Image 1 (cartoon, rainbow, N blue to C red):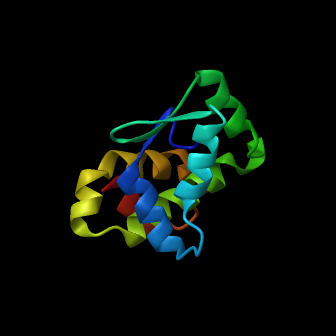
Image 2 (image 1 turned 90 degrees about the vertical axis):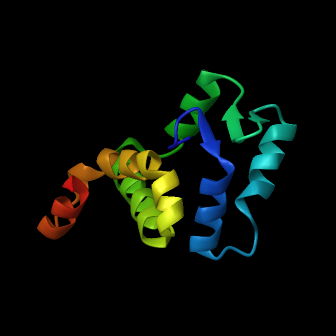
Length: 114
């Protein structure tokens, strides 16, 4: 839900790789597909309705939204190869920008601005 209405397969795989999960995220996404909450597309997954995406996003406490986006942005930025970063630069920067209000390190703010 933090990525908006849709998410690309390779971004999901990147998160899985970075987290080193024994259980892949796609297992949970496929369960949501079978429940009609998500739709599997050629590029990845998308919510079957915008209100479902809003409901899923609301499960994250409002006070943690910025921290969660920052965590996702850092996770993607730090674990993506140069090619992956190039392919998903907008996704990474969007997550970091949503979390920029809770970046307190001046060097990190500078790197984000670059």
